[in-house]
Length: 279
Length: 302
Image (cartoon, rainbow over all chains, first blue to last red; front, side):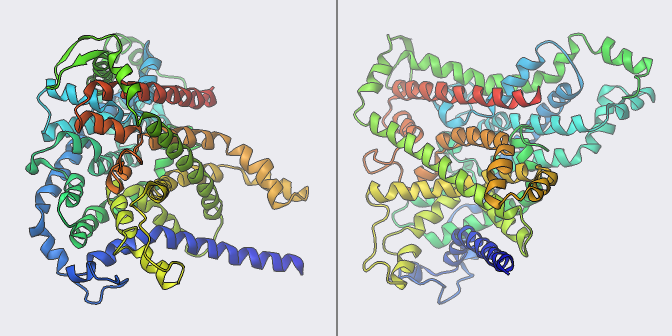
C-alpha cells in the first residue's frame, strides 16, 4: 500500500519535473517567436503584452529590407561551408594516421590537437589579430574561414579517429589485395563506412562556424563581410533596438541549425569529450 | 584478429613507415601551428614588448605591461567576477544537469521532446540566446517584469540590468542556461553506460534509492563528471558573447570578466600590451586545465 503510494508520487513528480524543464528551456524561444510577431507599437507598449494583439507576420517579409539579411546569410554560409571543407580535408588524413599507423611523434601530435580543443579565439585574440595582420587577413572572409577551420580541427580529428577505429582494418587490407592503395582504400572502403562520424563532424563544424561571434566581431568591420551573428549584434548599436526584426532574423538564423543539430546530437558527447565517455 | 596477408604486412610496415606517414598529418599540423600556435607565440612576444599607440611592437620592456596591468584599479574586481562567474556557472549547471540527466534516463511519455528542447541553447548562437534574455529582463518592456506583476510578486518594475547586484545574477543565469545542454548530454551518456546488473543486485540487497545513487551512480559517473567539469571550466572562463550582449561588462567594469576586460583593453582603450599580458596569464591558467584534462582522459585508456 505504502509502496503503491510512493510509486504514484514518484510518477507524478517525474512528469512535473519534465514539464518544468520543458517550460524553462522553451521559454526564451517562445518569447523570441512571440516578440518577432509583434508590431513596433506593441513592442514598446506599456504595459507590455504577452501574446501579440495583432500577429505581424509581415515582419518576416520586412526584415529582408531592414538589414542586408541576404548578404549576412550568404556570408555565414560561405564561411561555414569553406571552414568545414578545410577542417575535413585536413582532419581526414590526420585521423586516418592516428587510427591506422604507428610512428614517432604520433603521441606528441595527438596531445597537441587535444590541447587546441581547449583554446578559444578570445584568449589568443591579441596574437591572432596580429598574425591575421601579417597575412593581410584582417577584415576578410578568408580570415574568418581559416580561423574557424583551425579551432574546430580538434573536434573533427577526434570524432573521425573514433569512427575509423571501430571499422575493422581487414576490410581495407582486403581492398589492398584487390589492388587499391592506401588512399583508394580510405576513399572507397573506410570513408563510406564512417559516414555517421563524417556527417557528425561536418554538421558540428558547420554550426560552430555559423554561430561564431567573438572573432568575427573583432576582425570584420566592412558591412559587406559581416556574418549573421555580427549582423544580429549590430541591432544593439542603433538608437532604439528593433526587437521584432532582431528576433525575426534570429529565428531564420536558428531554425536550420537546430534541425541539423538534433540530427547529430547523440554522437556529440563522445566527440567532444574525446572518447573519455563510453561510446 | 586474422593474420595479415604478406602483402598487407608489407604495405603496413614497409612502404608506409618512411617519411610519407608524416604527409598524412601535415595539413592538419600546418593549420594548427599557423593559426593557433603562432598566435600563441606572438601573444607572448607582445606581452613582453613595448607596443606603440599605432600597434607597432618594439623591443623587450622589462615586464612593463604586466606592471601596468597590476596597477589597473579594476583588475581585482574583474578577477573576482571571473572566479564567481566560472565557479557558480559550472557548479550550478553541473548540479542541475545531474538532476535533468537522471530524469531523462527514465522512461516517460514525451522524453524525446524534452531531450530535444534541452538541446536548443547548445545549437543556438550564444548571441541570440543572450539577446532574448536581455529582452526578457528589460525594465519597461521585459516579459519577466510583466509576469511578476501579473502574479503580484512585485509592485513596480525592477531594473534588472541597471545595477551589478542584479545584472550579474542575470548573467550567471544566462551562463547556466547555456551550459546545461552539453553537461546534461555528457552525464546522460555516462548514465546509460552503467550496467543494469549493478542496480539489480543492489535491489536484491535491499538498497534504497539514495544508497543506490551514492554507491553506484555517483562512483560510476566519476569519469564523465570530471571530464565535463574540466571542459566546462575552460568553456565558461572563455565565454564572451553572453556578457558582451547583455551588459558589455558595464557599468564601469562592474560585470566584466577577464575575457570582456581584455577585449576592452585591446580594442577599445588601445592598451595592447596590457591586453596581451592578461591574455598570457589566462592562457597559462587554461593550459593548466588542458593538461589536467589530457592527463585525466588518457589515464582511463591505460
